[in-house]
Image (cartoon, rainbow, N blue to C red; front, top):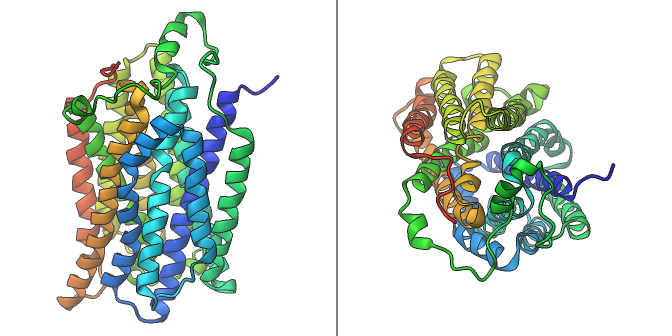
Length: 428
C-alpha cells in the first residue's frame, strides 16, 4: 500500500526536530568542554548559552507570519540553509566572544522559524482526529535528538575535539534539507486527508490553514484567555526543559563530580524518556477523544495537569538525590511527564485556531523562548551567587533554587491551564 502523503510529511517533521535538537544539545556539550578548558566562569557560560534564545525569540511571530504567507515548506528550507551554513563556517573558540554571540543569535533566528512553520504544515496535512499523535511524534523528535546527542557527542568531543560537533551538525542539516526539498510539498486544496465519512466535515473544517490572503485576527488572538493558557504553559515547559538541557551537563560535572564521557548510555535516559512519553501522550489523547471517553477539552486538561504536577515533584526532588542513578531517575521522570503534558497545551493551538496554527504557535513559542533567555541566564547567575556566598557547587543547597523555580512554575501553570483552556475551536 502507498504511504499517505501526510504520514510522510509527519515523518519528515519528526526528522527535522530531531536534527535541530542534536544541534542544540551538541553546542551545549561542545561549548561547555571548550569553555571549561579556558576557565570561563558560570555567568559568562550562561550568557553564551542563552544567546541562542535571544535570536530564537526574534523570529517566532515573524516565522508564523512568513509560514502563513509563503508556506511552511519554503520557510523550513530557508531555516536549515542558514543555521547549517553557520555551523559549517564558525569556529568554536570561547575567547572569540563577539563571534560566538553573533553566531548563536543567527542560529537562534534561523531555528525560530521552524516550529511555527511545522505547525502550519501539520495544520494543512493532518485531520483533527490524528492531531495529538502527529504533533506528539513530531515533537518527540526533539527528545530523541537530545538523547542521541547526549549519548554520542561527548565521545566525539573527547576523541576529535569540540569543533567536530559543528561539522557533524552542519552535515545533518544539509542532509535533511535535501530530503525535505525532494519529498515535501504544499497540499493542493482538493487533497484533504482521507478520513471516515462521519469525520469528513470536521476534517475539512480543521485540516487546512486559512488562505494566505485572509486577515489574521491579531487582537482577538492576543486577548484570548485560552491562548494565554497555552502561552503560560509553553513558557513553563521550556523553562524547565532548557534549564535541564543546558545545565544538566554542568550539574553532573560540578554537582555530582561526574564526567559525561564516563556515564555511558545512562545520560541519554531523560531525553529517551521524553521521546517515549511524548508519543504515549499523543496516542492516549487521540484514543480518549476518538472513542469519546473524554471531550477534547477534558483530555487536554487531564494530560497537561498530570504531566506538569508529576514533573514538578521530580524537579524539586532532584537536588536531594546525591547519586548518579537518583539524579538520572528524577530528571527522567521530570522530563518524561513534561513531554506527556505536551499532549495538553502543545496540541491545543490546532484545537482552538486550526486555520492560524502557525501564528498562534509563533506567539506561544515566543513565550517559550523567553523562558530560555530567562532560565538559562538566571541559572548561571544563581550558581555564581552561590559561589560568592562561599557555597560549594558540589552541595545540594547550591542547586536547590535551580530546580525549585521550574518546579513551582509547573504547579502554577497547570492550574492556569486547568481553569482557562478549552478544546473547542474559537477562531474560524
